[in-house]
Length: 170
Image (cartoon, rainbow, N blue to C red):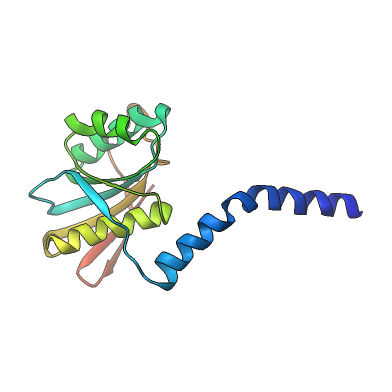
């Protein structure tokens, strides 16, 4: 009876212990002190209006084709894409690969993960006064995989918050 319980505690500690100080530092910097994560604008678009997608990415070598396909589907559905790339060892490869793709590209440290990337993208839109020109704002991350022949987004829920329409797709 005690052994399974100890195994669970050991598994929990072995997973979270290495991350503890990193998570604590992030929480203090960005939760308590409310510091903003700095980002670099790698590729900029002058018109982020109409339908805009903030696309949060954490690069992995095998996901670049899925990402390019997803961006293509978004563009076919009249979305302008703002990619927020969370920096890791593969981010330089992604920067090169996305250089020829029709999108804006921001690169940032991976603090706050996807929601931190969404905040960075939203802050960028706010600072550059794009928010008033946006009719629909879509938040997705790189775990959304579009099938190879999938070219049409299906709107399932629309929520109006202030002046933005938030849309959830299936």
